[in-house]
Length: 252
Image (cartoon, rainbow, N blue to C red; front, side, top):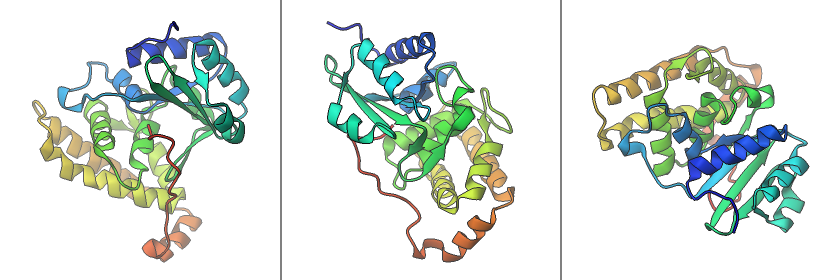
């Protein structure tokens, strides 16, 4: 019998605490991270079941990260980790039938989201800007991606800094240097408006999200684009601008 908690949020905090004690930079992403960042709790319409925990650790930290998860009762997928350990690690919580996915150095699925020193901004989760980026970099959004993205924009303002806000300046900078990321992220951001009518939100919830979507799109638009962005924009959709990563039993 392991000490792994059945409650996903409790387990995430347990893992984060152990990583901090070990001096290991390890930050949570995905739906559980969004739930933890909602100070007043998620609106009922945004609540969902969580199948796994997703983390990111700095490049070169694979060995230390493996030691932490194994000490906490997780079983490594030895072959996968041996082959992919420089970029990704996989562990299982056999008692609860759950998976733990750890990205190493950067988040890479349909697009790459770099972290660098920004990984240390928050004590438990990645910053809100990256939480939104990792959700809206997916070429075909599913229900959980839409719900999680709307939850972020409902609960947090769009500003020019981090903390309890979505850092629009950082998102705009990344999109201005990568046309492919810009193409996917802005298209998905615009599509959120079309989903709002499906959710019952109290008060001005829908209007609040719509205003924040508009503000973020405007900030991305006004950011000066790089030479590489402009060159890639000339090719446009004639060439595929995203990757189709091999799924390892789902994403964050």
